[in-house]
Image (cartoon, rainbow, N blue to C red; front, side):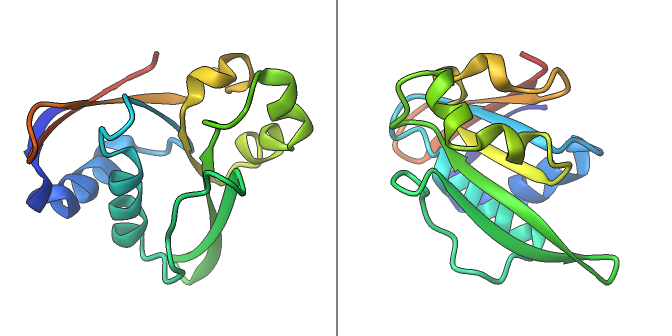
Length: 141
C-alpha cells in the first residue's frame, strides 16, 4: 500500500489498511513528530471496533484496548517507544511480551528499539505532504 490521503479521509484509509494488512499483528509506525501516527492509530482502533477511549501512550508506554472479532473479545496494544533510551529499557518495560503475544500491536517510534521486533513486523511509513495531506507507505522494513 502506497497512498496519499486527506486527513478527512483517514477512516476510509484505516479501513483499507486493515483489509490489506492480512493476518499481520505487529505494525511499526515510522514518521517525524507531527506526521499523524497517533491520529492514524486512533482511526485504526475506531475501524477495528475499539470502544475504549484511545489516547497516546507516551507516558504509560503501552495502552491496552479491547475489541470484538467473530464474537470473541480480543486485545490490541498501542505502544509508544518515544521516551525510551534503548532496547534494554524496552525489554525491561515488557514491550517484547506485547510484541510476541499474538495480539495486534501498533507501535510508534520503533526505531528506538529495532532489535526487539518480530521478523514478520509490518513497517508503516507516514510523511507529511502539507497541512491536510499525508502519505502512507507499507513495507516489511
